[in-house]
Length: 179
Image 1 (spheres, rainbow, N blue to C red):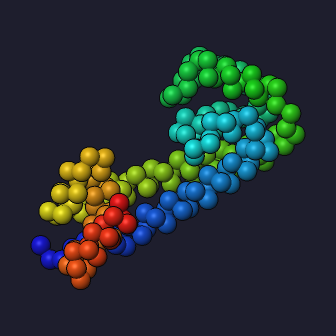
Image 2: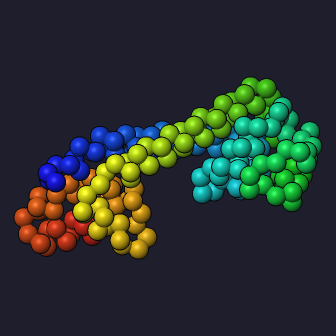
Image 3: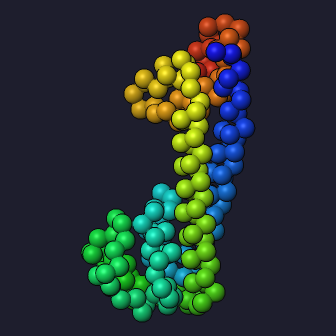
């Protein structure tokens, strides 16, 4: 296998990084909008934007005013228990925010869809990279506990060839920095 096989995937890796950055920007914008419309929902978004929150925000018809939400047993959302749904609705009923209007509803639904679509695109690109960026080095890195196929490929894309480094100490230092 030629040494530069991994460098050919560098543009894909950079594109994934760009998609992640765009997704982070969308999530930050969503958090700002949610903060002004339903700050109580923010407690579920401390570590990003969970898929179930996006599903709630994308699928609830006439989302705002949130105070008028009713629990509909026929509307099941993955990872949202009956108790969690009741908790969200009760918090919405007690919310004191004033920016609950159709513009905010449209913006929230639009951002939720964009975030979900962007995450799906990121996952698609990561899967492509994991499935196609192959080699003995990737296979070796993949055997390390906690490192899956995508991460192993991403590490080798950064290293490209271990022979780029002058001495074993440079190689070791670079590998430690990447991991």
